[in-house]
Length: 138
Image (cartoon, rainbow, N blue to C red; front, side, top):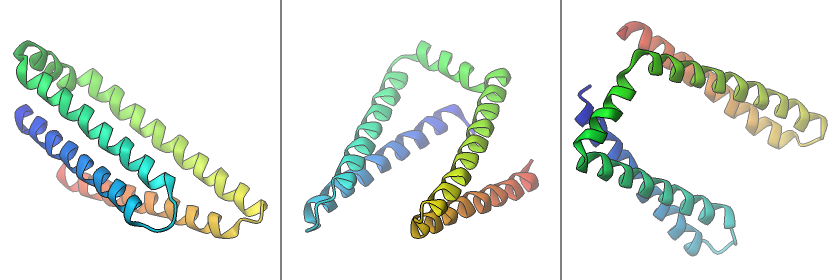
């Protein structure tokens, strides 16, 4: 993918974050039950989107900075490091979720353990779907 297209895609994703965040904030005000989690999460997603848009604008304005970032993102060593970090993070997160399911079950919180198990299952399914898609493409 062309680097400029990649940046545009990131801009659209950032705008989507802002829209989702604002939607969550509005929902928390419309909802009759107090839910600080939804409004706080909405604020954080909105701020994250704004920061990403700021980064996009800074890259778009400065050609030298944009070239340096492009080289940084397309360097094979950096790509390998990023891939290994994602793989390790996924493995650790998966392990922690499994431990949490067992701990919640022992604590008698079977409903929470069940929903966390569904989350673990969803991660595994998404992983295998992505694996087979990339196996066909690459």
